[in-house]
Amino acid sequence: MFEKKIAVNNKTGLHARPASDLAKLCQRYESNIMIKIGTMEINPKSVISILAGGVNQGTVLLLQVEGEDEQQAGEDIVNFMTHLTD
Image 1 (cartoon, rainbow, N blue to C red):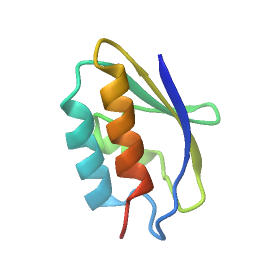
Image 2: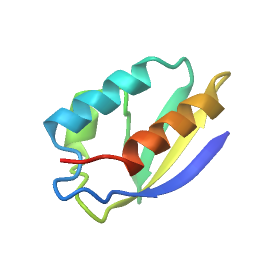
Image 3: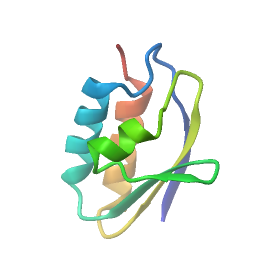
């Protein structure tokens, strides 16, 4: 399993455009992908789930990826999140 904590640094967090981009990225992978914020779980393959999570600047989330392409998926999602701009 790939696990990594990520802090959201962009000013507007995961609003509609980056949420849509993240969902499209995650949908390319076969692995099960989950984002956890405390006890809340977000399915990043769903734009609605991402937006419902209310991810703002400064939020620290735990990315969990499990499956045959977990390493590549995890690295790509971390790269997306760390280079996210408004």
